[in-house]
Image 1 (spheres, chains in turn yellow, purple):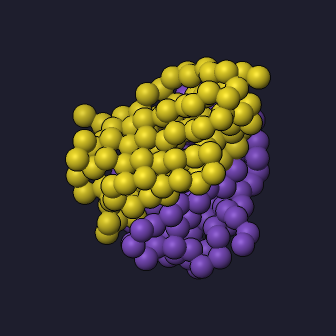
Image 2: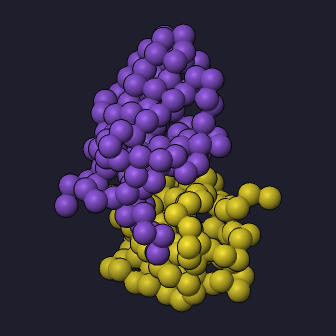
Length: 111
Length: 115
């Protein structure tokens, strides 16, 4: 079983839609959860960073962590064409500096 | 704050040739990572340095890949000889390395095409 599983997509939505991106994981030691946005031919850019369970909001983006279900989500409200990218989830444990990545979900927002 | 710098951005070589990539991490970041990202996949860790020591190189194909981080700052990753399946984006990343709520920051990557 992979440490982190992520829906690969591709996902195509109309502009203004709410987008939900998800990852599941198997290691209960993971405490820190990240979402990266990766545009074509660019390196991943840290988008959201959360600790333990709960929600974190930043503008149109909300990161949600449910540790009991080992499930994390990224919601994008009022999606824009500029949100078209691949979204990677990543996580690490409290004491480690090893990061575990999902395979990425490709998102296209159609104007 | 300057980000992670990588060069070159693109490289095209023929199989069996050698190639080297360079990385300069964010100032003060003790941990440096090299990842390989094949199209449509997540980053795969090749090697992780803490200062100038290797923490994890279990997935580095040591018969052809080598990496060093002299003086605990810049790093180079070398492939010799290259194979077709080495075509990928090579990402360098860095983190503070204090093991408490680490954040990982990436460079723009080097896109390698092996023909």
